[in-house]
Image 1 (cartoon, helix red, strand yellow):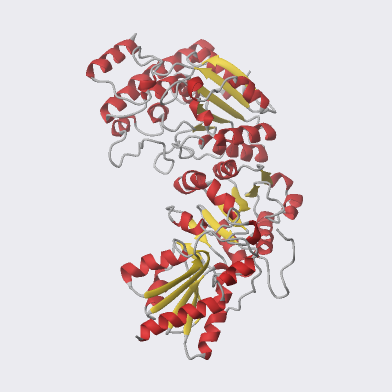
Image 2 (cartoon, chains in turn orange, blue):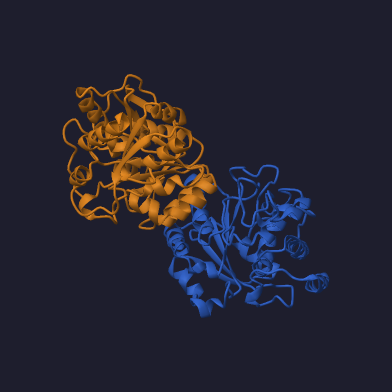
Length: 318
Length: 289
């Protein structure tokens, strides 16, 4: 778990997350943070110094952390329950289901350092199953922001939304994306590049790779649409219908290659707009290796996305 | 001890004396027992053993102690009751109806299709339910969170959690107990329905809980042990808990599973089950005494 700074021009989305939670807390006394001994890994040190009574550290006890979060919501608070995505989701899954979603408690769950950010630590510390697991839970909003701006917007939208939300907060260095229309709404996809030959639907740390892939494909005469599907639940069906009309879809996410964003897209398309697809993600438990190496090794990269697109387009032409 | 002004019964006579309060709780508890058995017989399923062991505790809270208003079930400063042993809906629903959260006639819909009276309580459907429970080990951590909110806000509401004793085999209960002790949650009271039976056998034969009081004390709690079927002792324990405190309180309520119906008492087999017509008649006759 290195504490290295993100390279120049790239950002660790945890910084946007803590900055935004703290800004919200300045204006709204209901905002509290709940952690599982994860003040450091959640970068909440400044929040603790500023609001010592509003930083609730339950220790290493994820089930209690999520239950306490639901109780704080009952008591009128807006808790941001933050812990490493791998433990927050898997260890406390029944609390997320029952105490948060089924009870419709106003809890904001923040899966920190999700995906394979803890690369070398291995599959116990990877959070690549989280979206597949949580997508099965009714009435739970799922957001996977792509960059610092969208992380901040997602945190603000989650605070304003009355109900449980899971936000996947990356620590992988990502660039700030360039947008012509900087608005964020839960459940609304963002089209970052137009194109009608194929659609690339990505979220989180894969969005900038998708844009790079589209650039490469453009040089080959292929117009690829790039859709940032930050909200996985509820998914933007209109954007999916339009994407399916291109005749080919590649999905890409820092998660399993089944059950997550790709699974959500496939479920919709299979029933409404059948279309050829490739789903980019991890094929299962990942071995040791740096996060960067793991992403490249498994094709979670611009090259991997472009390659999948070419394969699909060949099938489409044939 | 709490002042009479703080004791606002939800329903019934304006009880001012302790004897009258005790008599009122006894009457309501007897009514709850008859009512929940009728619900279980009508529905053809239920958890009578645990309902009946919890009845006097729930009656003491809903018909005397809790500062709640059925007309305003979301009042920020209301006392909270969390049924952590969520399968005991017979007792909970009878109490909620008796306290005025919904019409008593609705109890006849218990467990029927589309009824708000689900096998485990659901706050989305039913006013007065604080959090959805059912799987064991959930209500207590949520109750701790409510108490933390009250502690941060310096609110004067109190939080009461009723747990089963078998439920204490869940690890999340001790995560919550440890944290409540650490935070010194003086606004929190946990009642353990200590009937010594879980679904399949005795708690001590299954996974020993004793020395139970020592366990709670070691986690930083005040512990009181009472007869969980004696409203006088229960009210005293709850009243005393109203004094400003710096530690959470655990009331170990020694109870009898199936209490009040002779053939159900201390029988693990009545954890769930439905009396037949003859058994039901016997039960009602015993409860009329």
